[in-house]
Image (cartoon, rainbow over all chains, first blue to last red; front, side, top):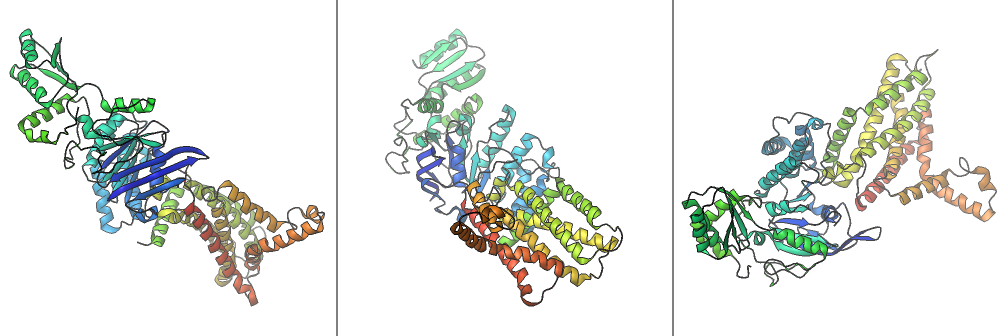
Length: 365
Length: 254
C-alpha cells in the first residue's frame, strides 16, 4: 500500500501554475525526499497533502484516502518555519498538542516525557518556549511531530535558515527519526539532507517530477575515489600503482578511477600494511548534484540504473523502476558523503562480508 | 475523546495564551473604565433598565473587540500545527469563538459582581439579573458568530462584502440612505423594500433581544426571542464552520 499516491496533480495560484501534472507514489515505510529549487512547489505539495490547500486538478490520496479528513491524526508535520506558541512551556505545549490528538491521561504524560527525553529537552521542559534557543525549538519541532506516533511524517525544509551547527543538529535528529520506521516525506533543496536521510529522491522541476532516483544507487561504488594520506613514499607509490592502472598517485593523494570495492579494499590494505596514515577517503563528484543541476538547467541527465521516463512514475516491479542497491532492511543511516572514516569502516566490513556485493545491480556503471 | 472535548481544550489553550499575552488587560481596563463612567454610584442606585441598556451596548462593543482579537490569533503560522491534529478545522474555529465568548461573559460577570457589591441596582434580584442577562449575552453570542463568519480566515473578501451588503440592505431606509432610497424610481424602491424585509428578518432576534434584556418581560411570544437568538447564532456558526472547512487555508499573520 502506498502512503502517498498522486496522479496528474495540478495546482495554480491565480492562474499561475505551480504543480503541473505531478505523478508520484511513496510506498509505506519509505523515506522519500523531494528535491527542488526554491519556488518549485514543494511546500505547496506538502500543504496539499495536509489538506490545507485544494488541488486545481488531478487526484491525491494519502493512505488510500482521497478525503484527507479521514487520515487526520495519522500524519505528523514539521513545518519549514519554526513558529510555536511561545507563551507555554515545552511540557505544557506538548500536553496540549497531545490532547488535540486525542491522547490523554497517563498515556499522554508518558508520551510527552518520552519525546522530550528523545530530543534532549527534559531539563528545559518547564521553561517557556520564548526562552528556547533556535536549536531547542528545532528539537521541540521533532517532538511535536512524533508525539502521536504518526504513520507518516511530512517534513518541510528542516534546515532552511539555520546556521551550520543548527543544520547539523537537525540532521542528526532526523537521522535518529529515520530509524523509527515512519514513512517520511521530506521536501528540501539541500542535497546533503537527501543523501543522508532518504531512500528515494524525486526531483521536482517545472511543476512535474523530472526524475526519481534510488539514493542508494548514488552511493554505489564504481565512481572515482580520492584517498589522502599524510605521507607517501616512492616505494609505496610503486606498490600501489602496480595494483591497477586505475590507481594514480599524485603528491599525497591516491586517485582510484574508476573505483571498485575490491580495488578500494586492496589499496587500503596496502596502505594499512605499510602503516601509512590515512587522512581521508573522499568520493569524487556528487552524482545527485550533477543530475540535479542538469535538470534545473534543462540539460539531459544521465540517471544511475534504469530510470523512469521524465515526469512519470514507474511503480516497483515495473521494468522502468530503479533497482535498489541494498536491502531496505538496512536502516542505519549512511554517513554524509566525504566522511572518509565511515567509508573506510564500510569498505572493510564489505571485505569481511563479500556477500554484500551480491546486491549490486548488473547495470551499475 | 470527542469533538466537544477537543474544542473545549482548545478554548482553554487559547484563553491561557490570551491571558499570558496580556491582551486580557485591554478588556479588563475597558471594563473598569465602563464601570467608572457609567455604573459608579453618583447620586442614587441605578435602575435595572439603565444597567441592562448600558451593559448591553458595552457587551456588544466588547464582543466586537474580543472576537476580532481572538480570531486574529487564528491567522498565524502556528495554527498549522494545530490544524494538522484531530482537533480539525471546526474545533479550531469554534475554539477561538468560545474563547472570545468566555472573555465577554467573564467581564460581564465581573461588572455585575461589582455592581452587586458597590452599587446595587434598585429592585433587581438574582432572578431579574438572569432574565435580563440571558438575551443580552445571547446577543453577544450572535454578534460573535457573525464576526466569526466574517473573519478573514473564514470568508474571502468577496464573501465578506456580500454579507455586509446584505446587512446594509437590511438596515437601509431607517439607518442607511433613507431620503436617497425614497427618491429612487418606485419599482426600485419596491424591490429594495422586499429585499429589506427578507434580509432584516434574521436581525429581528437581535433587536428584540436587546429590548427584552431591558424589559425582562417574557410574557406572550417574547419567550421565543432567546430561542430565535440561539438558533440564529447556531445557524451563523454552522455557516462559518461549513465555509472554513471547504476553503484553502493560507495562514499569514503573526
